[in-house]
Amino acid sequence: MRNRHALSRAAVYACLWFAALPALAADPLPKGLLALDGRAAPPLVLNDLDGERWDISAARGRWLFVHFWATWCGPCRKEMPTIQAIVPQFDATQLEIVLINTAETEDTVFAFLAEVAPDITPLMDSDGLVTEQWQPRGLPATFFVDPQGRLQYLALGGRPWDSPEYLEFVQRLVGQ
Amino acid sequence: MQRQPMICAFATLLAALYLPVSLAQPEPRPTPSGLRYEDDSLFIRIVQRSPEQLTAFYLGRQFNQAAIEHILDTCFVTPIIHNKTFDVLWLELDTWQFGRGDEQITRIKRDYWPEKWDRSELPQAQRSTFGWTLMPEKRDLRRDEGVGGSVVIPWQQQPFTLRMNFHTGADKQGPLKTIVFEDIQCVTDTP
Image 1 (cartoon, chains in turn yellow, red):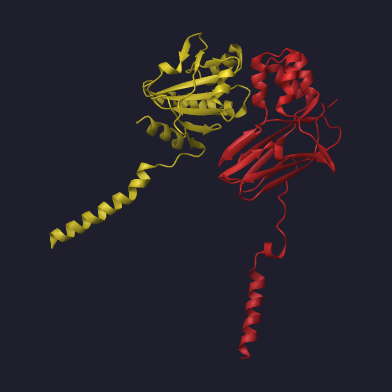
Image 2: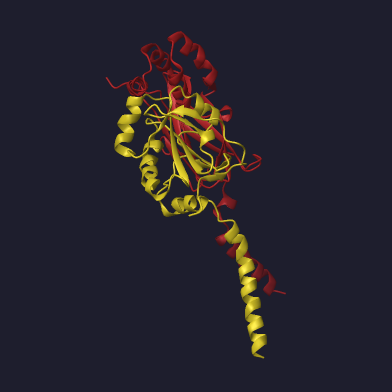
């Protein structure tokens, strides 16, 4: 009799677990995030504000947060502090935050970022042609590139990256 | 037998009282308030910049004076759009209509500018920036996606109307959403 009760309980628990599996396997994306088709990321070779060269092909093995922006864009300015806020949350071996400034001068970029995001050294797309190759839907735009160099997600416009919903998404992505 | 007509009359009365108003009257066309429109599914605001504001903005982006003169020859209409709830809301500038009465105003498209930039010897960086300040020609706005940018028409001395048409649904088979803004003006600098 006791065995039959235990078996019934086990069956109920198993049913509940299987019912929950789809939800666990497919957490809904936060608002404004789009799943991409996993195609290879376009080339990206730019100098940063210090003149150091950065090449995306050398950045395999970690997730990349590839963010296109400009100082004149209101949503970009609003979003940047939230990107700065998540920098300490991630090890560079798990997630590298790559800011790409579109078509502005070093003085303009330095004056803005020094106040708002001092911990991030941006890449300078001085003539805007790399941005055009990546074809973001507008500015700002954030692509998530996986450790194999494939485009996996796109954030539509600015997002509050330091809010729980978005921070947890990124944490799940990098396996934290 | 006599009870039936009474029941029918009572039922008819009840139905008449509780029928939605929309069955009795045509649904009102969505109406902006000035240069702003909002409902549960969509937000639109139109920002009009004066020549002084445009000059300051583009000078700040290191545009040369010759390029700015070309910009000031035209009229910039700058909508900010937020798709709140449609799965897909189609932004297609070719479906928008600028006009005044029966007169149609032809939009100035992106291919107008390269020749102006060549004449002004505008560097590539500024040409890229200018492109990003324009409204995209076509975009499948997803739920909770916003977009903003300038739509350009020839300078207008008189107020004009802008009729924005948005197809909805991934296959554009959903209801057409049309918002009409009236009495928009090309802004001049205050003396």
